[in-house]
Length: 76
Length: 222
Image 1 (cartoon, rainbow over the protein chains, first blue to last red):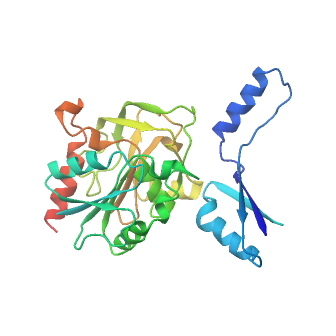
Image 2 (cartoon, each protein chain N blue to C red; image 1 turned 45 degrees about the vertical axis):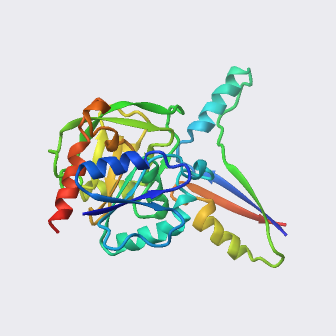
């Protein structure tokens, strides 16, 4: 089984990289980009039967820094 | 006074840290990240600057999970002293020994220069050799030094006089110009600037010397 973890900066935390990407899109002539937030996607290959709770624990302990980041887990 | 300097793959200020501590009179032992134990009777653990584990995932995140960091947490929980500089500060926040987090510099650039560093409190074994309000010249060299914490944490840091150092001219977007903070028991200091790079005239300045001398001197007398 696979899990896909999305890690994003929390709302309200300034994302300097997202701001730079937004600026670059404007320079390329893409009008109307009102905001860019940049995050990470982490794909995990897991032994069958691994619970969502275990993946959540992985997020809490390592994959995300919950001081500044939020995360969501997709199992497939 | 016994000091341990932790060494991770990618640490690059470990030897400078050892030199600064030795020059101040400490017995220094280097400790590899895979070791599960600190040397016996160690008084202070220094977490040096560098790029531990290539800054993979987040700066300091992998190092914070290493065996030696479990020993570091136990050392601090026993009331031991710890000093984290630059990547060491990032490691201390990732272990949860200090609150908040260090994000990418607001200007997105790696900043490498000497900066004005204001001493905010002299109330710690690290900063007692300075007066509050002193402005030191200390080098910074980092890409992720933008300190972030929630409003409650910031209020706590302020109310408990736990901001040790602030920038006179903020180089990285750090909240409230914060450059270094203390733990609640004031025995753990994390800071982005490099005091170990300002302890010898050949460094171009010696403003960092008092930090090491005061720390070593205080712990000699315990």
